[in-house]
Length: 145
Image 1 (cartoon, rainbow, N blue to C red):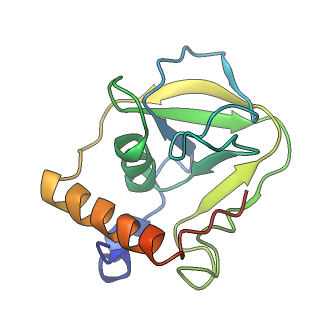
Image 2 (cartoon, helix red, strand yellow):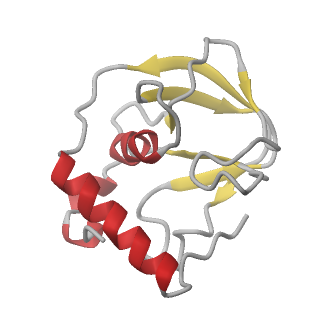
Image 3 (cartoon, rainbow, N blue to C red):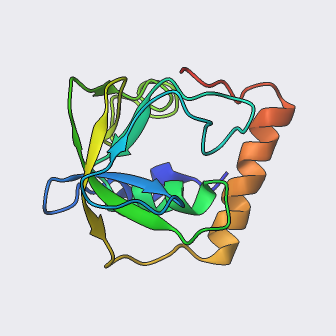
């Protein structure tokens, strides 16, 4: 997998301090993301949480990795209940929560769309996908959901 730990800029909190959700879904301001739908990443899995991050680059990557044919979108979101650190990265892949990744089992409202972002290179995405595939083959692609 592309080694994110070697690229600290990947962990920079966006200057706005906003929370972002990356997806290929076409949503409108005011709509709510709610748990209980098919996962963006594992079609056989129903997501129990809505995931978000304060790192724009992380939301971009989430959108680029999401299933579907729609264009990549990064939404600015506002949780309607408590959030917790995302256990899929916190202390599992990186000590602490340097990715500023969170999740909530409550609705999350779309309050805007971020359109000023740069996509990752096809080479980076390919390396990332290959790394995920290695984890799957080795049985280490655990999802704490």
